[in-house]
Image (cartoon, rainbow, N blue to C red; front, side, top):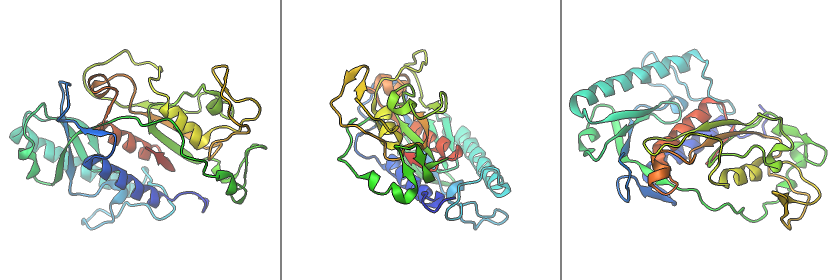
Length: 308
């Protein structure tokens, strides 16, 4: 792996920080067990064992699985499979405990790669019974998150570092960006937008959707917000010359234009798909437990960078 790429270890640290923020609440969030009209309520249970991406060893018979600096998590590794099976057994043991001690708790998601825990549907029941359960580190009510603005921060002069990375968008040279995989956890990506599509093969952007609960529409590729497409263009928009327009309307923007890292692989993880309980009953929101599921999928897919 090129030394210019962000290492898997750095990604792991960043993901852990993001997951910590999801569990404690950050801006654009509201508690899922307050300000709610949805019939479902959820909580996230974090276990004491480390997730696969952060396990440094210490349990007899289970070697460390945390990636070395500059390497990704290898899901095909025997050690990863072994420790993942250990976590699976621990999850099963906890679910057996739930059946006897909190039968109202319905498990809706499980996590083990970047975060070790489960999400449960609580429907208003007290979480006190779970706090002292064996192997539990914390129990946190779910939070609702919302998209933020779709306006970029001021110019960051990314073109100043392009030459050192072998990047020249005007010639199509993408240097060390070749093969870099960027996961965009957001409102979805319009892969037909010219700023996204003009330098990529049709169908090259993968799409995954995450939602929970009631309020379902017939799923489609219709995007309800532009934020994810805007972010994807900022990350990896294609080099553009001439008149800049959207839907045939001149935008009055100075060309040439380019994303910060033109040519990277973009992968879409849509947590605001336009259906599901958080979106329908919470004004276009997303549950934190679905966002964590998107992070898990992005790690499993081998993303070099995860943007959230």
